[in-house]
Amino acid sequence: MAFAEWVSGLNSPFNIRFASFPVTIPQAALSSNSWSKPGLSPYEAYFDHLVEYVSPGNGLLSIKQDDLYLPGRGLDLDVARAFSTPYAFHYSSSPYMYDNYTLSNIGYGWSLNFPWLGTNYLHLLDGQAYPYSWVGSTFEYHGALDFKLVNNGNGYTLYTSDGTICQFDSSKKLTSITDRTGNNVISFAYGANNYVSQVTDTLGRTVTFSYTNNQLTSITSGGRTWTYGYSVNDLVSVTDPLNRVTTYQYNTGINS
Image (tube, rainbow, N blue to C red; front, side, top):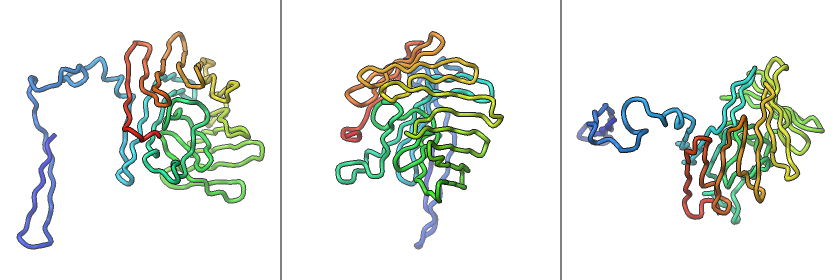
C-alpha cells in the first residue's frame, strides 16, 4: 500500500488531501522470511494470536499474545498475556497511578489476560483499565462496555453485559468465571506465593503454572508446555510447544 499527500489551493487556508492505493511488489523484492511470502504460511496462524495497538490519544503501546487456547463448554479458556507501557510516565520516581500486577509475575508491564482488581483500577481484557468510581458498594460503568462491580464485604463480584460473572476473594484474587447459565465455571487456584498455580476449565482440563524465584517460567496443559525467559525483571522470550521462540526487547529505562 502506498500513500500520497498533496495540497490544493493558492491561498491560506490550504486543503491537505490524502490518498492510498495498492502497489504490486515483485516476488524478488519480498522478504526471505516465510511469513512475508505470498500464499499460505506455516506461521500465519501463529502470528494471528499476536495483537498490538498504539493508542492515538496517548501513544501507549498495548500487546496481547495468546499462548494456550482451550475451547470449552459455555466458556473457552484463553491463557494470554497483555502488556502496556505506563512506565514511560514517572511521578516522584514511580509510575503515576500504576497498578502492580499481583496474581503472577511475568515481567514488568505484563499481566495474564484475565480480569483483575488493582489498587486504582478495575482491569479487564486486553489491557483495558477503568478507575474506580464507587457509589456505596457498587461501581457501574456504561459506555463502550457495560459492567457492574460489587463489593460484597468478603469479596467482589463483577457482572458483565453478556451475563458472565467473575468472582474475587477479599484479597482481590480472581477465583472463578461463570457463564450466563451459571452451569459452566472456570476456576483459579493459588500457591503459597499468592500467584495463580492452576486454572481448571469448564471441561475439567487443567493448566499448571510453574515458578522459579517467583517468576513464571512455564505453563503446562495436556502434555504441552510453554516456557518463559527473563533478563532480570523483563520478559524476553516465550517458547511454545513446537519450539518456536518469540523474543521481546525494551527501550532502555522504560521498565526502570
